[in-house]
Image (cartoon, rainbow, N blue to C red; front, top):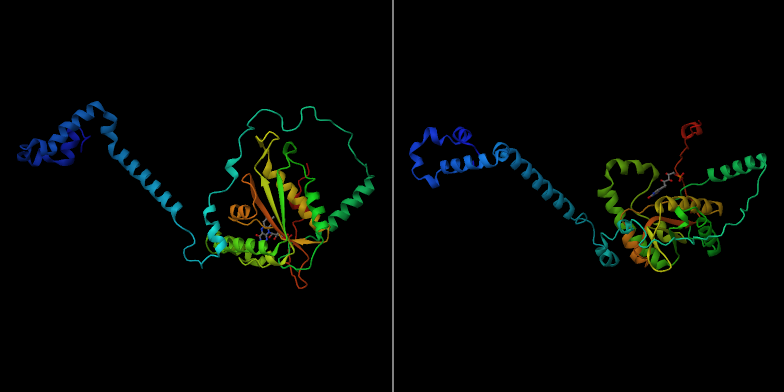
Amino acid sequence: MHFLNARKCSRFCGIHRHRPSARKNFKNHPQFFCSRGMEISEKMPFLAEYWPFIITVLVCVLAAIVLFKTALDTPSDESLPPEPDLLDELDDLEGLDDENEAPAEDEDEGPALPSDLKHVPLQFERRTPLESLTRSQEFLDLMSTRRTVRSFSSDPVSPEIIRNIIKTAGTAPSGAHTEPWTYVVVTDMEMKVKIREIVEHEERINYERRMGDQWVTDLKPLKTFWEKEYLSVAPYLILVFKQVYGFKENGRKKTHYYNEMSVAIASGILLTAIHNAGLVSLTSTPLNCGPAIRVLLGRPKNEKLTLLLPVGYPAPDATVPDLTRKPLEDILVEI
Ligand SMILES: Cc1cc2nc3c(=O)[nH]c(=O)nc-3n(C[C@H](O)[C@H](O)[C@H](O)COP(=O)(O)O)c2cc1C
C-alpha cells in the first residue's frame, strides 16, 4: 500500500469509503500509509505505478537464485555403495578442473620460439601419381581394419613399440609448435587398479544418473557398461593429457594456442600408430575422472586428461559390433 496514490488506495483498501471511524487513530490506520503513499507517488511516480511488477520480478529472481544454489549443493551419489579408500582421499578434488586456469595471454611479451629461428630445406620425396594412389589405397585398407576393442588379452607388449607409438603421436602439428601434450604410460598393476577404481566409480554414476536415458540407450548396442575390466587387463594404459598452458624457460606461463585441437590431431595419429603396430585400443574419455586421475599420476595443474586408452592385443574371443562406415558421398562434398 505504501506506494499507492490516493485514488488507488481508496480503491484497494476501501478504508476511506467504508470505515471512516477508523481514521481516528491516524498513525495506526492505513490512511496514514495512504498519505505517505501520496508523498511517495509524487516523489517516485515510477515506483508508485509499477511496484507490484517490481516485487514480482524481485521474488522470481530470488527464487531462481535459491533453486540454482540448491541444485549445485545437492550431493549426487548418496545412494551408491561405499567408495574405496582411494576415492575417499580423492573426494576433495572436485573443482580442480584446469580449463579456466589457462592465461589469456603470455605473462611477458617475449616470443615462445627464438625470433631468429633457422629455416632448413624441407625433406620431401615426391612420389609418382601411381605410387601415391597405391600408397593411399594401401593405407585406406590398413585403416579400414581398425576397430575399437573392448576385451583385451594380458599378453605383454614390448615397451619399445609403445615408445615408437608415442614418438609418432609427437610428430603431430600443434598451434605455434607448442606441442601441448603429455602421454602417461602405465604398466604398474597397482596403479592400473587404482585408475580402474576411479573410472568405475564415476562411470557407475554416469550410467545411473548423469548420462540420461537416450545416451544409455545409444550405448547399449556397443555393449559398453560401467564396469571396465580391460583397465586392469590390458598391458598398457596410455593417458593423454592436454597442457592448457605451458611454461617458458624463464618459468613464465606460455599460451598454448588451440591446445584442444592440437591434442585431438595428435590423438588421431596415436590411434593410427597403435593400429599400424598391430595392436588394439579403446578410445575413451572418462567423464569426471580427470582431476582424480591427474592427481593420482602426479601430473601438474596445467594438464587436463583428455583420453584414456588401454593398449595391447585383443582377447582371443573378442567381438566387435557389426558397424558400417558412411559411404564417401555422405562425407565428401566436392566443389
Ligand atoms: C571421443 C570418443 C570417446 C569414446 N568413448 C568410448 C567409451 O567411453 N567407451 C567405449 O566403449 N567406446 C568409446 N568410444 C569408441 C566408439 O564407440 C567407437 O569408436 C565407435 O563405436 C566406432 O567403432 P570403431 O572404433 O570400432 O570404428 C569412443 C570414441 C571416441 C572417438
